[in-house]
Length: 416
Image (tube, rainbow, N blue to C red; front, side, top):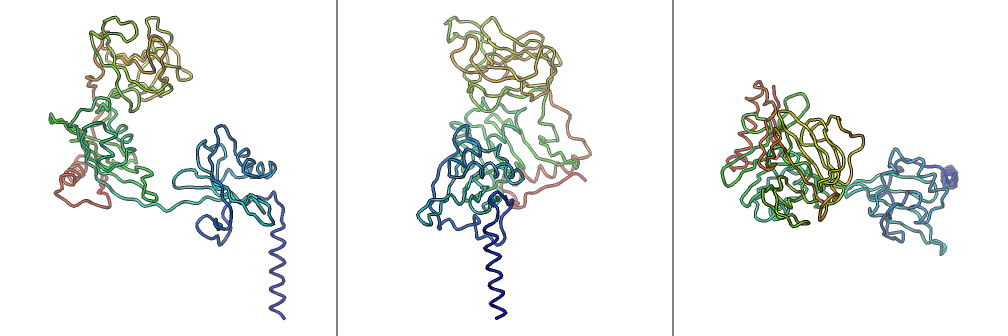
């Protein structure tokens, strides 16, 4: 009899909980959730779609079947688990419907933030939301890529993720011009990556890279911790990879026209000097200052350059950026900029056949080829760290040459 009363009491409590206020929002998964989403998807009808352009969170949930009141209540209280302002157009969303009594009721919605994380929204009974992460694995990789067609294609052919290209472009942004790679140029890399369901989702750490050319030029990049928490990359002997100027003012695209003293203009047909490098890129591509300096010109160039910025640097250098679609906010003549600062966006203003950046460098008033510029290096590694650094460097060299086994834990030394 006692057991019967206990069972009856538990049943009543569960019934009362189910009849609680609809507007209550639980943040975090309920206890004892069934894997992997927190509910059994096979018990529901599912519709798959994507977030529409310009769609808000409440608009999405109403479209899927929630009342506007419940959708607003959920949106107001889910910042700690999911920021509704970061809803991205094109991301997948799945809606799960119950069909009890012939009615089709939205029970759950699952929004995929990325390939690893999804947010689950419970849309009936008491409202709730929680995040679900797919399992990931981390692995250490070695890649050997020789340029035969393009860095992108050759990276894929070598079995590496092309997302590694952007990491290399950041590491070598002062010392290797990725717009001017030649057949036979070679990258050998040791790095960590994260995979989810067999696909690369991120490049975590590039430990070492050796860039070499058929002519024998080599530029190493060794990630080394000096003990102050700032990991940075150094070449052989502790030479800094960072230099006075970046090799290019924008990210990886392509060169459409090179420095020349006799180029036929594509619009006017006139043969005249083209003392610039043109970088073809989509309108809106960010353009960055190649070095520290002061803006001396910002405005319309009447000679066909359209929206133009000119920056004065140290040691008599100046850089020029033309055909911009617009400028970065807050800039004016006299503004100080630092290396890598956003200054504008690629466009086709002035005399141009399409969107591109006309980029020029002058030294003491004389135009020089940006692709041949060899700017001064920053301060080298402190000599107190050289002994530890050289051990790291030699270890990585031996590893890519195959003279020592690959270290699956990533060989790492810090200065002592």
